[in-house]
Each structure stands twice: as structure tokens, then as C-alpha cells.
Image (cartoon, rainbow, N blue to C red; front, side, top):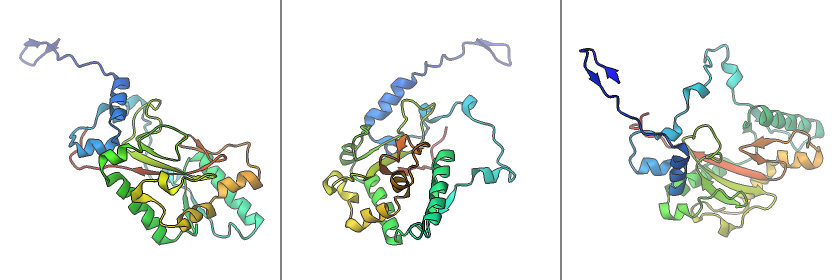
Length: 240
């Protein structure tokens, strides 16, 4: 019951019960991810994407604490030139994975044209025909190439506004026919460039870093190398 300023009593509208599990299943069942929501013309962010205020940390963003949230930058220059240099780089990779979960690599040796082609390939994949793209939507961890929205969709406290494509690069990369036509390797050079930056995988074999298993996005890199590329859909008319 709500009492208005004029003293009139009115019945407060009953809000429908929020069934998060059902909404997650419905969203997952579309196989179109957040881009599908944008393409459908949604004007309000669904509740599954809204974080509960009780789960958000009240963290100050002042300059005094900003350095704590800087993305680690690791220079791969000289990784093949000597054991001391290599050991130092591997330690930085291990620390970044354990403490941050991600990092930026510079001087990795991958040509700019390959990086640009990767970005274009991701866009081509997400912009392709919806029905074709649905064929790659999966949560099967054994698939060498797949895409979905939120690897922890059913276990995370809230849902992230992103779609991600995953591709296993080592030790057994997918064959060309297992990849989408719109973003297949143009040649073996692309695959080889990734193997040249395979510091974590090689570290397991040569430096025996096994006590601290490096994990990111629920994937253990000591067993395989994977490339995860996320697409964040942005629309000016979306509101909470």
C-alpha cells in the first residue's frame, strides 16, 4: 500500500518475480548473444546483465589508486636470445596471469597486417548471417572453435555484455574446415605467429612451471593455448 501526498491510498503494483535461471536459458537458447539483442532493437538492458549493488565494490578511482588497476605490459623482446631473459619474461607472464588474468604483450613479433586481419576476421564472424553463426554457438569445451556469450553464464553472479569466440591454437589446432569461412587462416603464417609467442606452453615443458597452474577464463594454459576474442556491442539508445 502506498499513500500519496493528497492522502489517497493506492495499491502498489506487484512486480513479477525475477526468475534468473529461466531468463538465462532463454537468452542462451537464442544462440545470438548480446549482438542478437542489439539487432532485435532492444531499448532496455535485460535484468540478467545488471549487477546487484551489493556485489559491487565501492572503489575509489582517484589517481592515488589508479596504478593498481593498470594492465600489465610484458615486453617479449629477447625471449629467444638467452635463458636469463626468457626466465624473466616467463615470470612476468606467470605473475600477470595469477594476479590479473590478462596482460598486454609488446614486441611479440606478429606483423601488423596479421593483427589487422584478425580484427577484421572477428568482425566478419559476428556480422555474418545469423543462422550460419548459430552453427558455431556452443558450450562444449572439446570443440576447437566455438562462440558463445559468457563462458560462466550459469555460474556467474551477473552476465557480462559481450560475445566471445574461442579458438584452440595448440597443441592440436583446428583444421581449416573446422573454422568459419569468413575467418579462416589465409596461410600457415598466421598459425605459426601464435606458436612463436607460445611462452606459457613452452614454460611448462622447459622450466617445469607446474606448481602454480596459470588459469584465465577457466582454461588451463599448461594444457593448451587458446585465443579468446570478445565483441562488446554498444548502442546509444540502450538504457538500464
